[in-house]
Amino acid sequence: MTQQVLKGLSLAVLILASCSAPSDDGAGGGCGGSEASVSCLNVTSIVPTSQDEDTSNVDALQDQCRDAVTGAPTGIEPFGDHNAQVTLVNKQFPTSTATDRAFDIGVIGFSVTYSLNQPCPVGALGCPPLTSITSGASIVIPAGQTVTVTLPFVRLSTKNEYVLAGGN
Image (cartoon, rainbow, N blue to C red; front, side, top):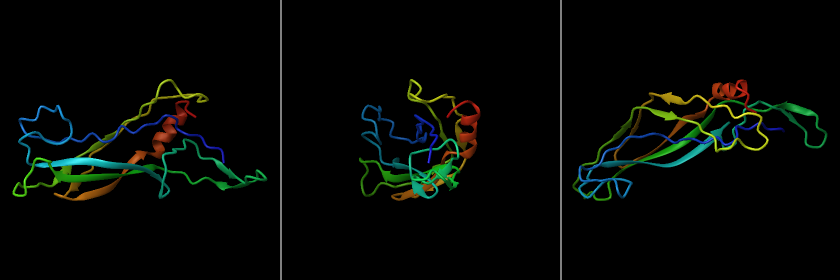
């Protein structure tokens, strides 16, 4: 089967806000400062999926499937949205003690942006920009828990936009 792929597509993960102690100067990165004692949200994995299978290969065009030996058509390739399984962990800051309170964390929205590794990949006929995805979907991660959610990665409408703008 011939595949047309969105080349060089990257997911600019989730933009998530968190908080830390007033004494945190951010120099160490990660969660908390020397006085931090609340919760920290970590994105521990992002796994792109399509048709209920893990894959980072995003087809831009639906193809006719063909027999590898005869070349005869065998059917239409399954085609639709690509999603991502995103795993979020709510844990207390490393400087917390057993008596410190832990809090549920709520995500009140997310966005997905697309960018190309420059230059445009060899063999690509076009590298048009794509419209970002923004959602106001709410996600609650209870204190001390791990939650895996399915979020949109590349919608069918984004694939169509890519092709109509000259991408292949």
